[in-house]
Length: 512
Image: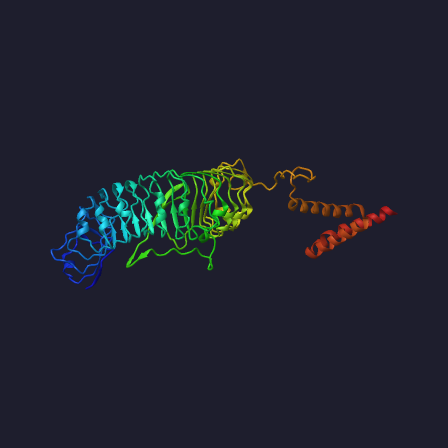
């Protein structure tokens, strides 16, 4: 047997011994079980190239795996290993291409021995308790394509060398400062850059504008400051950018509309879909940074990245001011837009109605004025809307998706009225006439109700007046009604006949 896959079962205890008797085994996958003991055999398993033990209950020290000398892909993530990374690991995994130790309880520092892996392309030791500095030699590795050190206690990063080949760098969730930042210009193949939740206090990284492969850039929850946009160039930069998150920093000034129009992947393509990021496949190894932290409905959550379809802009919780640029309406493939908690003024641009794919829009906690553009009701995919705590006025547009939003989407705007914020009324005060309009102010009349009432009154008056003042019409009316009653009730002829004759004789006698 060459390949054995027992993943996603309920195997517990130690790895069964019979597995190690498969001498020509090349591929072994025991992930997503309840295994807790890793006792390797006394024989060399020289043929094993792929070993996946992630999502089990292994604990204690990280195994040295001396009897697996030819492993090229090793995944020990999501277990309970609690030791340091052994420095002797460099003598064992000589041909390793993919190494993942993420989501364990590993502590200590990152050993420089990891830099001796000449063929290493993917290194993931995220979600652990590592501390200290990221070794300079690790940032100088020429073949390394993915470096994921997210969510540790790391404090500094060495500068990146000119032979940097990184496509994905994730050092978010640490305590890193930004002295290394400008050296990232040497990593001209970067596709994913996540620096979120650190202590970086630097201006907007315009020096990365020539990194045309950039698809994801996350700078959230740092101390970045100043204006965004790169004014020294008229060229297109970040043409394949699909996700940009600048939330919770100290950026200020106006958002340059011309900068937004350079992000071609958010605008349109030949088949009307975003530009597709590469699968991040390196050699025989496939790997993708699978999550980013986003803010949705005021809550931070981890979002699975589907890079072929998802586009996202989050500039919330900064100090941006001025008007929201109308050019944002050109990003027709945008799914998520968050500009909340800034100091934007002016009106809500009607060009936002062009964002036909938009599913979430948050403009809350700004200083926006004027009416809500009725064109926004065209956003048929809009599932979340927050315009609260601005200075908006007028009636809330109705119809389409707007009928699904509750009062919290519009609260904090004293001039807004209409459902769901206030009860609607059929007869309302008309708005103030514009300059040059000489019509009298007053109540608006609902002619749909008044017209039938006027018609009924006039018709009834004409009919009754004719009977009262025209004797010939009155006699004809009485005769017609009498004949109609006799046809319906023939017996009335016998009852009323004697009375009619009596009246007739009496009249003749009286006339004499």
